[in-house]
Image (tube, rainbow over all chains, first blue to last red; front, side):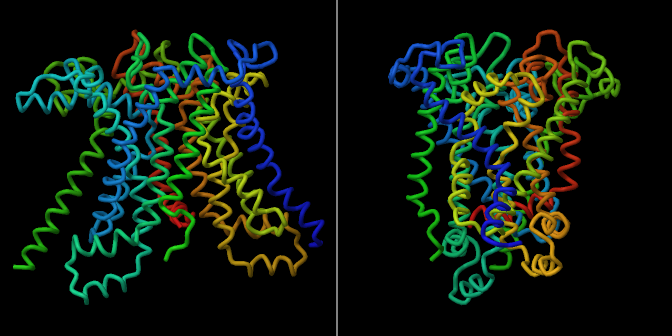
Length: 302
Length: 278
C-alpha cells in the first residue's frame, strides 16, 4: 500500500492537478510571452502570421520615453508608498499591541479596509474625500481654515495627485501589514524585555531601538519585499482614480497601466506589450533577488 | 515625576489610536453618508459632514436603474468568487498536503517550482494569459474568469506550512486502521484542519471578489461584468447619479464586511501560522 511506486503515484494524485494548472496558466503564459515578444504581433495572439523582429520590441520599449517614464512613475511611487506603509503599519502594531483594553476592536478597525476593493476605495477618494470641484471632505476641512479649493487629482504642479494615490493605498494596505507585525511582536520573548529592564534600558525608545526593532527583522524583510512586489503591480488605483470618460492622462502611469494600454488599448500591440511584460518581470526578479541577498533572506536567525 | 510622564505618554498613545481609528472609519462613513443622501446633499457647495435628510429609497432605486446592471454584476461576482474559492481550496489543499506528507524524491523541486511563481507577480503574466484565454475562446466566460486564477501558489504554500505542523499521530492511527492517503486525507485531515481552510477560503474569497485587472481584461461584455468592473465603469458614466454609485459601492462591500468581521480571527490566525515571515 505504501511502497515507493505507490507513494510517487499518490504524490502526483494530490499535487498533479495543482501543478498542471499552475504550469498551464503561469509557466505557459510566461514562455509564450517571451516568444511573442520577438514578433511584431498586432491585433493577433499568434506569432504565426507576424513578422519576426528579434529584439526590436525590446529596443523600442527601452527607448520609448513613455515606458521609461512609467518605470520612473513606479520608482517614485515605491519611494513614497513603501516607507509610508512600513512606518504606519509598524506604528499601528506597536500601539495596538500595547493597548490594555479594546485591543480586538482597534485591530478590527485598522484591518477592516483590507476587505475593501481598490475600486470602491477609489470611488470614495475620487468622488468624496478628494473631490476637487465644489464638495469633498478635504476641501471642506481646508475651507474652514480659509484655504483655497484644490483640484487634487488634476494638479500636477505641485503633484497633489500623489497624495490621493498614496493615501488610498495606505488606507487599504496598512492593516494587513499591521497583522504581520503583530504576529512578529507576539513571538518576541518577554525575557528579553525583562533583561533589558534589568540592564536599565528605559521603556519606550531605547527598548524599541535595542530589542523590539532588531527582533522584528525577519518580519520587516518580508513586509518590505511584499510592499515592493505589490507596488510593481499597482494598477487598480491608478486606473480608477485617474481615468475618466475622456481617457487617461499620460502622467502617473505605472508600468502595468502602460502595458494595459499598449497591449489591449487602441493599438492591440501584443508583441510590444509582451516585451514590456518580460522587461518588467526581469526587473522584479532582479530587485527581489538583490533585496533578498541584501537582507539575507533565508538565512537562519542568529 | 516619572509616573506622570508615563501616564502622559499612555494618554497620548490612546488619543493617537482613537484619532487614527476615526480616520480609518471616515471613508466607510462617507460611503454610507453619500449613499443615503440626496443628490443635492452630495454635491452641495455648502457640504456638511452629516446630511440633513436621509433618503432610504436610494437603496431600492439603485436596483431599478436600467443604466446600472448591478444585480447581474452581483450575481457574476458571487458565482466567480464562490467557484474560485472552492476550486482554490480543493486544488491547493490537496497539493499542500501532498507536498507536506507524501515522501517523494523530487518533492522539493516541485515545491520550489510552485513557490517560484510567487516571485513572478501574477500581473506581469496578464498579457500572455490574455493571449492564452482568448486563444481558448474563453473571453467573457465564467471559465475564463475563474479557471486561470485558481492556482494560487500562496494558498498552496499556506496549506503546506499548516500540514507540516499537523500532528502525525492522527494520521498514523488512520494508517493502522488501513486507510490509504486518499481516505486519510478526507476523513481525518480535512475535518481536523478546519481553521486553515476557513482562513484560506476567506482570503481567497475577498481576493476574488475584489479582483479588478483580470475581470476588466477578460469580462469584456457587459453581461460578464463583475461588481468591480461595473463600479469602475459607472464612475466614468455621464448619465449616472452619484448617490446611486455610492449605494452600489456600499452594496458591493456589505457582504464582504460581514464575512470579514465574522471570520477575521481565522485570517489573522492563518497569516500568523503561515510562517510568512519566518
